[in-house]
Length: 126
Image (cartoon, rainbow, N blue to C red):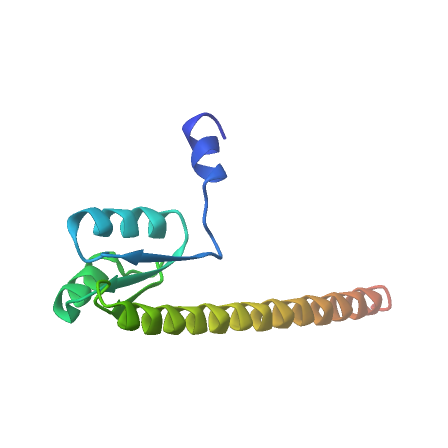
């Protein structure tokens, strides 16, 4: 890895969640795309569900996790509620990640045990 690749790798956001208020507009949409490209799960916050759907269509693919949260950022109570929803989603994602990592660890342990047993049997074959 050299130059630009090293620099890009140092700014990876895998496993992180980014919330972009105004992510349905041009500037916010560009920011949401850059964050998603860097590996972050992105929550786009905006007033217009139609524009939110368009943003999701532009940004969603197999490599990106992008969601839309409808909210008028000028309305403090709505913004506070939206914040709580985002925090709940982040906590849920963290729990799911921990469960997946635990499951993978268990699979690796089982695989190691099976590999060892299969290796023992190979020496007994004639």
